[in-house]
Length: 467
Image (tube, rainbow, N blue to C red; front, top):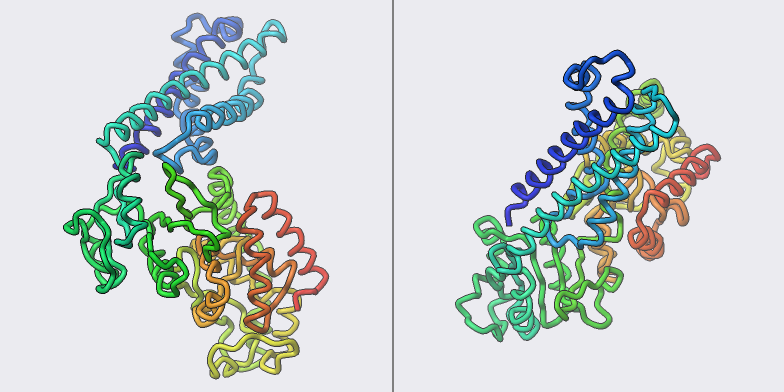
């Protein structure tokens, strides 16, 4: 499937319908309002400065609003009822905003004309937008039903589970482009061994040379540690990943999505709404940019304090594992003596002698963390999300809690539900206990929960309960 082409179709349709709706609104405004304000003809009004500027800016405004509604996030497999309500709610919000910012500037002969203009514009905008979207979505659905369009799937596994997937999956818009053997000793139960394109060791080359849209793991032994490590290695391909769902699956905390009676756990998805994802991402960028600018004097003061407290650099840098399992460099104000990390990966303890006196003050008020707003601006992190860990500790955590890998489906954060409700953890067992709070966050992600966590964090900062 050509996702870029489908995106362009939706964008073009939404831009065109917004343009037409605004033009028709101005015909209504002329007949109800503008002709009494000195315009001699409809042509003169349509070509007036205010209307022409609106003809350019209003459609762009709608595209931005539709982006934040999350409509463009999922291009295929849209449910018609979801499409209807998404369009309806977005149009109501968008039309209401335009009414109060633009239409109320008009001076009609009677108050009732406002109602005529508002409901006319909202109705026109909704009908035109939904009809064009429905036609575009319907065309895609027909292409999928005729197998002209399909999601290209590479299946890892060649046993009985893979055989069942092979029988059922192609009937629901998926095209299996090959099977990958888990190892050279696995017996194949897949009809047509010519469909086996390689083994796990060949995945880097296969992902580069084959048009893979999704990955499905169908192992015979779900609990095998090799499969957990395999799953982790697939994250960097930036493709949706599903795994066969069995009772007591180690990834039980993820949602099981049944596709034509095939139970699959979509391990690269969560319950956060598409609109919420887009709004959260935009707010992360805006807030981090403002903080970096407005708190620049505080950054300078802390930098001087760090330099005067002990010898060494101002910033502490360390590799952490973030979104989709990608490593990144995290930044903090140095709170330990310069040679404190020379002994390898060690968790911070209470009253840790490696922490400088000034560093203890920074940790108490969480001020050592504020350079991470730069990580947010770069896209490595978010304001709220599970705290990123070092690979060394992740390897130990997943031995007891393999579902930890689910947290890599979201960007790590400066603050988290685990840090707010549990705090710092100085042992692996305590990290696993704190993990339960982060999994609760993962399962219930929302903008409201993010705001709640931020409020708790601000309280911790101002009360000095960071340690």
